[in-house]
Image (cartoon, rainbow, N blue to C red; front, side):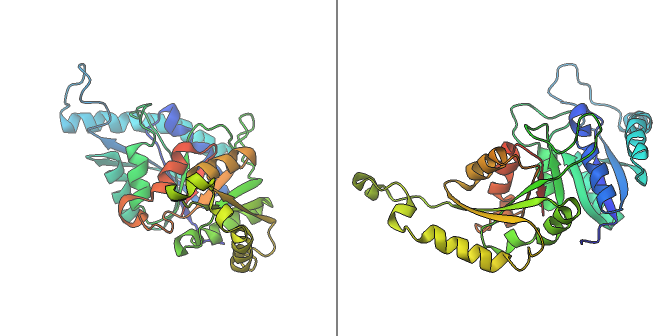
Length: 303
């Protein structure tokens, strides 16, 4: 099991932001970790393009925001206390939220998991993935659980308990896609969850084949699916021994197939590596991961 001693929950106290709180509490309980609740006081909390916005005096603004944050932390503290989780608060100041969060993570040390909402108070509805979340996921040195108000969630709205019974694990045979294995197994083991390992054959057929009626790579190579299944079992049967696992090979755009399988299989959680075989995550924040979070019908744990 991963040695997670601290779980970080970031909040701006908005309803959207606090939607991630029950997940942070669940993860802290799961790993018997301390829950650190972080609020970043920044001068750009509000929209400078708003006609009513007035650029504040920095010192007075930060003092006022800090006092307000102390009061608003109370709700979060009560929720965590009721769950029996060790908790403390942290207030930091910075130019922008994501920079303040990343600086805190570096200075604090020992943060093993971050739980945060994909959007907060300043999030625009037409923006698919909040810039704060995207920047934290891109640069954070530890796994991130990205939460939004989705079609299917593993938190019971009445009891606030988390039930993770089905986990979807997208796998593309790259080294990066294997990184979540230890965390995947620890979460699945505690909850006896079923793991669905999904590989999508994301190959475009050259247009020259269209006239002959070929629209699928499997039409050109009927044995491809079976060979991929055999390779998946060869790579993962050992690491996943003792866990209920099923393997699926499908065809099409990976993002679409992941969303469809999560919806049809009623997955409680998607666990995936931050970058896949295209390596773009090293530079531009894995495009597949970003789109999966945008389209996901359940929370996404990025490792």
